[in-house]
Length: 232
Image (cartoon, rainbow, N blue to C red):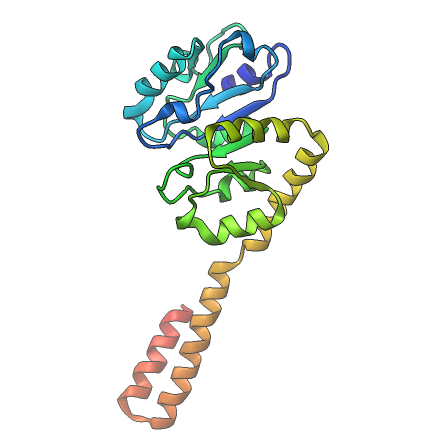
């Protein structure tokens, strides 16, 4: 689509997608540098979580001396020149985060550099994308631990270390490729929770039904009705 063309037209560049959810300070993920220094840098895409922050993040980008390219200025079906060095893409739309994730080489997942509990990394990994997060992932401990153990997620504690970690990922093509498949495999290994929960509940209902039947009376009939309703 139009979005993919913007990333792939002209000379190929790596895309680093930053899900900008860091409260109160969009400069946390906007590089403190000039357009000249970005000649050989990856393309940075920032996707704010809330629409009310679109203008704020755009202003932060421009204060750095960079050109902000808004997604809404290039909707599907429009024509524009290829993205140039020194340009930062702002995903100022709703419902397109998955598209940006699918096109990036490595993703920074927000709400994690500051104590906000982190964000869900499952969707990023399912797309086969290595991830960088901050130290705060309390709301997604299980997924965080699984991806970190698999080596598809790395942790940074500052904007400076974030930039260094992006460079580390993009400098090793084999690592990117290997961890891409590893991310998908880790997601597949985490699947099946719903089936396991249903099986556990059915086992409990069967057990309750047998106990109630042995006791007889109305309680046994009620248990049998509950079990048959669940089966249907």
